[in-house]
Length: 459
Image (cartoon, rainbow, N blue to C red; front, side):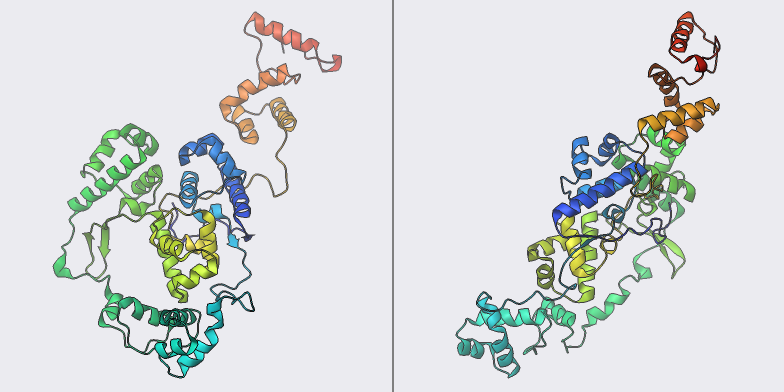
């Protein structure tokens, strides 16, 4: 398994989508292409992803739009990252990323928008919220809400008092208008990862071996594998695996990589909780409580990008044309949204869909084989495949080479030849008949050939 920072997939072309139907078609085409490049049947992929064959067929044909969890299950079964299936999908919007939504004007405009100008003028003159409400004949809460909305959309309205809550202080810092010096706790965030040597001790080799064995046992049970199945997949003896899980043997790095591939997880999952302290040059063990899910990691990415560009949840929801509560649930990883919601949020944040899903995949990934056919080319028909088999058979090529040329299993070439003979094709025989019934069948087929193409008796 290659390191996470090594690009192993070609960057897909940008595919703009404007609605759920276009996304479903583009996503279904990506899934079908990846499945064919892995040489998997729909039934095989559907079983590995926990879907029915009909459900996977609906997804590949673009009939059903899938959810994020289903998309991640398909990516895990194909051993690819999510961005490979998303294939450069980008939300096509007429607004620039994170720009304020267009204001409504004229007689059809919202009443609150018509108060933006007067409230901004009164506020800059130093009038209080109560005085502005009295002058305009509106509730005081309306004035506060409009001032808050204008600040979120980039208006420079001064603050009248220091923040009373941490969330208010964080909002002011995000907008870049806060003059309050940073709190002592905020300066300590930079050193959050430092370790006090008095609060932990160096992990011994026995503790590291036991911890690694527990991780192997956990992922073996999660994958539903027995010792025999895991031994066959990893080419190891069952007793050797049993000693690893009991903490009696410390596996080598190559074996850890092989086990991670058998469990379809990244190597970091097997070494989770074993940390290296460069300051002291020792290992330590820390239970990291691996409770984060792919949805939570995706939400953390969205939260990080939103804070990086300095917009609020309300402004992001307006830009992405979704409810603010959906943004809250998405950042918290509390709901399984449709894929189109993630694509819209990526477009509203102004980031590529691959950046939004960065680090979400915690399974084993490997490169996809190159496409067998160029875009626009058609696969060979059955008659063309039959002609290739007959030509290679006449040339005396071995069955394994013929199977590779036709993308078949070697054991499928033998039954294929009699089918061609029964259908009127006449590939030559490689041995004399062993039974009378075989000789009679050859004579009967030889009589159907033109006189110039009849082989000699016994061939």
